[in-house]
Amino acid sequence: MSNFHSPPETASVFCGISQKKATNSTANLIILGILAGVYIGFGAQLATMIMSDLDKYLGLGFAKFIGGSVFSVGLMLVILAGAELFTGNSLIVIGYLNGDIKGSQLLRNWIIIYFANFIGSILLVYLMYATGLWKTGAGVVGAKAVMIANGKVNLSLGEALARGILCNWMVCLAVWLAIASKDVIGKIFGIFFPIMAFVASGFEHSIANMYFVPMGIILKGQEFVQQALPEGIDLGNLTWGSFIGANLIPVTVGNIIGGTFFVGFLYWYIYLKTEGASKSSESGVNISDK
Image 1 (cartoon, rainbow, N blue to C red):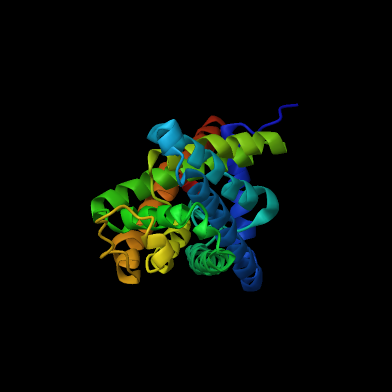
Image 2 (tube, rainbow, N blue to C red):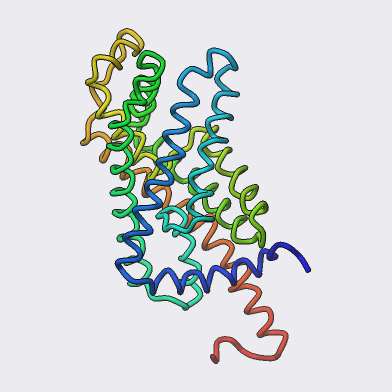
């Protein structure tokens, strides 16, 4: 027996997953959404720690590769331990397109999970702040967090949107590969490569940014961190308003497009709609009469 589902089988599996996610209780969705926000935050904080000064020794490209590699632990925790992640849940659009869930159920899931992910992310931000680990390396780790956040809020709307699309295209492919695999090691490798690729490439993930940017905002005023920042760096845009307006909104829209269209819709069309129509035609059934 194969240890993985074929692409058409995986598409069908997502129909069942969509039904379960769409009918889960509000309480369960909130708890699982908070957990996912924390888990993705774990990956984000680990990447920040690892990349704080790595480029000085290995070069920028390899530092990004290592940062992306360790960040992948976040989605591994979501998939293997069990949690509800907004970006990955773009794929329940397959159940909607297939008629297995209603549009209202889809939106309910997305809205609850999005805000629960935000709560989990902010929870981890304040826990990490309380640890004082941002002082590591004479404030270098905290300075790295500030610089990551500052780079994100200074993207143009077009850049943020495009990076959001590409990001969730990769994230949803990681989820697709993880669901396709029937064993744990297969799921881990299915997650690792696409997630490493999106982080190393510099794409934008709305839920990860719910950790990255708030952490930078609360650290930018710390004198210990300011001393480790590059001289003359402009942090004028590193505010809550810029975070939401210049980064979170366009990145979220891009994430929705990348996940729902480039993965969810296209694979539904290829493996469920098209093949379903083909099978009905072969059996002499006119699907327009159903």
